Structure formats: C-alpha cells, structure tokens
Length: 126
Length: 423
Picture (tube, rainbow over the protein chains, first blue to last red):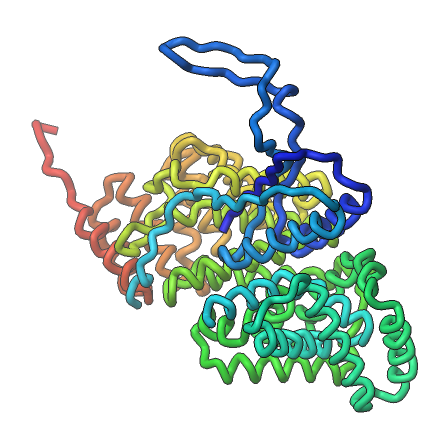
C-alpha cells in the first residue's frame, strides 16, 4: 500500500535541533527497513504560486497570499502493508513532535495513493 | 479486541527491525534475538488491550531487553559469551532510558547482519526464504505458511531447524565485509528473488497474499540497497522486481486469465514504480553491473517499460541484451527469448531460424513455450498447418489450465485463408 503523509500545522515553527535529530534517526531506520521511499519539506506558499481558472479565465496569483490557516510543512511517501501500519507509523512520528517540539500542534494526514486497480480473482484453476 | 490486536501487530512490525537489530547486537545471536522480540510481542498482546502505552516502541524495547537479560541470567548461553555480554547488558540497563541511541548509530550494520544471517548459504533455499520473511519482514509463521500454501507446522519446523543450524554452526552473529559481502550477496539476492517470484509467477493461491510476497521482496531489496549501496547486483535485482511489479495490474483479466505483453493495457502500468525501477537500473549501471546476473535482465524489462507500445519497443536492443546474457550464462531458455526479440527486430523468418535450431535441445523437448513461440512465428509466416500443430503441442505440454485454453484457442485460429483469384 502506497501511503503519503502530509504534516499540517496552524502554527508553523522552526523544528528544534533535537527534533531534527530524532526525525533523521527515524527516517534512516525507515529507509533501511525499505519502507520509506520519498520525503521532503515544503517551503511556504509565498515561494510558490497559484494558477487559477475562474469564469473562463486563467490567472497567475504570485502573492501576496493570505496564508491558509493550515500550512502543509512536509510530506513523505511510504510503502506499507496496510492502514494499521500506516497509523502506527504516523503515531510514532507525531509522538516525536510531542516529545521534542513543546507547544507545537498540528496533524499528520494519512492519504492512500491510488495505484492501478488490481484484478483480484482467486487465481485460475490448475 | 481484533482492532487492538491488529494495531498491536502493526506497531510491532514497525518496531521489529530496530528491536531485533538492537537485541542481536547485545546477545551476539540473531536467531535468539528474533525469539525474544517474539516474546516481547506476546507480552504486548497480553498487556496492551488495557491501553496502548504512549511510547509503544520504548515499551517493546525495554521488555525485549529485560527478556534478554532474564535469558542470560538463566545461563542458557555459553559461559564464554555470558560474562562478556551480561556485563554489557547491565551497563546498558544502567544507562536507561536512553539506551537505544548508541544502537541507532549503526542500524545499517545491524540490518546488514540480520539480512545476511537470515539468508546464509548454509541453509536450504526454502528455509532462507521463511527465515527472511520472519526475521526481516516480521511476518508470522501462519502468514508465511498461507503465502507459500504450506501447512503451518512445516514452516514452523523449517524456521526452528534453520535457527538451530545457525546457532550450532556458530553463524548466529557474523558481519560480512567486502569482498566477502559481495560473494555472499548472491545467496541473499537469490532468496529475495525466490520470494518475489513466488508471488509474481505462481498461478495459484490467494492473489492478495501473492501480491504481498512481491511487496515484501521489494522492501527487502530496498533495505539491502540502503545498507549495501555499492552492490550493483542488489540495485539490479531491485530494478528488475520494481519494473516487473509495475505491470501487475495489467497482467490478468477480471477472470484471472493471463494477458500477454503485446495485449496489455499500458495505462495500467504503475508509472511511479517504473520510475523507481529505472532509477535503480541507472544506479546499477553506474556501479558497473552489466556483467552481473540481474542487471541485464532489468535492462531488458526497462526496454518494455519505456516503450509506448509493443511495436514501439526497442527490439534490436533487447536482442543485443539477450545475446549478452547468453555470453554470461548460456541457456536455451535465454536463447529462445533472444529468438523472440530477433523476430520482432528483423522479422519472423530470422526468429524462426534460431527457434528451429533450439528444437534439437534436449532441455526444451517438453518446454511448452518453445512450441508456442514457434507456432506464433509460423502463423506470422502464413504456415498455418505447422503453426496449428505447434500450438496443439504447446497446449498438451503446459500444466496450467488457463494457458492450455489460451493455446487451444490460438491453435483453432490457425486457418489457411481461402485463396482468391488465379494465383
């Protein structure tokens, strides 16, 4: 199961060095367990842009933005066995925030990536 | 209860690589470490239904280490090891609660040791596969048994016996170092590929479970490339498996009948997985892997993955790659594959020339694919009577009912078109 995690917060804060150290350890463990396949942090929206289609017109919105209340700060892509495993992983990750980023609040969103649908017959008879 | 049970198992699987590698380091015995992580799981299953602790990983680690200490105190280890390890353990115990940080630093080394111990060449292949799924992927004996369609006691016995063999031959805690690492690698890759193929090619058993076997093999290969990043063949096998697995959704129809490559809906191929496969192949190539066993095979599958259609495929390159494989490990089956590529690149006549030579091979006398390939080429050349006979022969030789039906249909489609005009 391909899983994407999005970390969102109303109060984006610079991660503490202590948190970063623990997160790197967890990331290293997950890469070496063959489960984490991609990850990264996201810069604020002001570094990016919106292209909007409205009333039949395309327009470029290049800021300034009224930042959405929830800021997506990072993502990760994992290959996991099932949703239980996805939840266990996210819980551990959020516990790291709790332990090493006092006062930080936010959510870790678990999204299952769509993959081509598998036909699932009970195989063909021998 | 079942939901909690599932949650506990999931947490345990997430933590299991670290638990087993940490314990292995302390006990200097990988199979024993695995036993004790299982005991920690049993303890969690007993205690957690009342409430999962806030830091389940730390709980599991502390429990597993306590069990290790108990084990040592009961004096079940050799006296020589005992003094050394017990002392170290007690030091660790005093250093609680942050006893994991030192271990985290060399999780790569420990992971490598775990993988190489589970896949030790002194063990039979089937045992290596079972042990790897158990120790590296955290599958239960019941899950392994179901995936391989074996009775659970058989798998349990295999695992127990394999662990005993490792402990008794003093191989329970080894660190393979280059160049030994490169030599031993083939026995590891062989097991990973065996697990993958059990899921990918066997036309039997539960589809979902077989799919899981492929995923476990992929995870193992990714782990291997992460801890042994300079091994070209590991990257090559990862590439081969990612690229093959990327076609999984296109390989069968809703009734479970196989869909062959020319007829597959390529929009169902998993592009993300293809990208990963191509990346791994590039890495393998950079490391000089083309002389290896898996890398050229991955390169062939990559030609298909890159092609927009069957006809657009770079067939001349595939033919060259098969010729290269023939020089590495000559086999009539590879030559048959080369014949197919040559037929696509240069025409059916050129392919048939190679296939006809292969009909003399004793190893292929009863090989249904030889006849089905020959039938296909003859059909393209309009030699319908011969084509029909070959398809019929192929149908008789295959053990797979779906394939037999398919070949029988192809045989009946070989009809000489009625002639028109005066010619």
